[in-house]
Length: 346
Picture 1 (cartoon, one colour):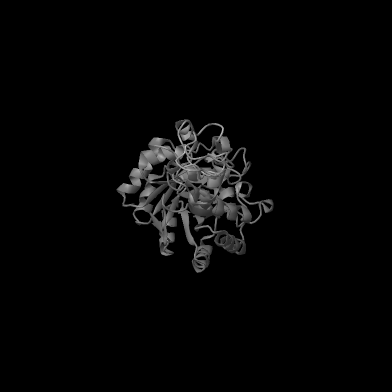
Picture 2 (cartoon, one colour):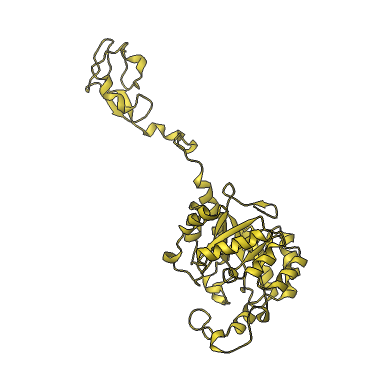
């Protein structure tokens, strides 16, 4: 899979998506600064969300539309999304700014009109949000663009994920990735269930990643060891300044650390093997091996009195100790000589 110029897969470092979401707090200059932060931190992409309050919900204060508990307690859905949305007139400005900085930028559309709008901006990928994974008509609309699709799975059961992937494939999508996600804001680490990443990889044979809402970076870094090829995290300039998603968003230094640590985690996976690693070469002297612990005359028998297992590791391996006891020395052997087979009778 490829987004822009960046290949995505197990043979590449994780593709890091910095989710801007509503953390611009209604200020386009803050949104621009957030893109600057993402690029400076080393993120591969910054992601927006493309909707208005009227395209995502109804302006109603009935109980169905009221939020009870959690971060957004007391808001109606319309109020929340009006607060959090990224004005559509900002999109061309933000897209151009990101492209000028050389960082990918794309968005999550929430209805057909958002897809049409984003196509007009020549977006190079789409993200389907967890809450929209069951909106198969929307998935089909996005798939018909032929652009790479990333789909989050928060709250979805396996059947719903299968249906979403099938709808995307049947409608023309070729490059599809799935992000394991728990839609808790924030998500307790003990509920992150990262082993789902390997289960999804076995089920779908696709690039699998993580959309992470836990606090900090430990969960995201751990996901790399389980094969995550894409990691998405919300970010903000300063959590103390508030905002719709500030409470579970990374600050700039944390985002930078995420980019560094996930790449290091990927590099550390390396290849399976048991040969000496380059970093170990200088430490052979700290292994044990067999040495002459006294001067030994030619013809003298080797014994516990004149052969010892000591550091360094330049002589015969200690496993040969019992085999050489009682054998004759073929030549004079100086004290502190590493033992080798040429010194011992066959």
